[in-house]
Length: 69
Image 1 (cartoon, rainbow, N blue to C red):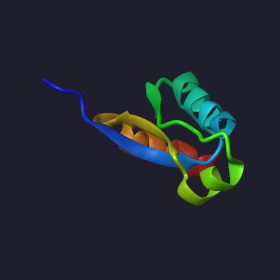
Image 2: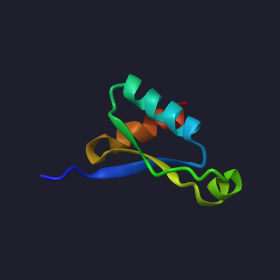
Image 3: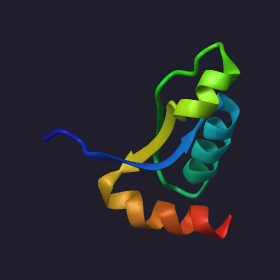
Image 4: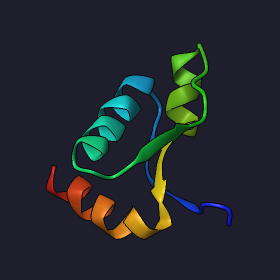
């Protein structure tokens, strides 16, 4: 069975995505980072190309955790 992922946050910079994914992982929620940043920051800001995703069954817990932080 294929795993379903849901996006919990979108970022234009990789550092923010890493911090968010790390915080989720530290709280027991496996998180993955999808997407690649462009080397042009203005493009990244416009497209929010980097997404932090979690397993569908962890989505609610992840959103609650992000709202608290």
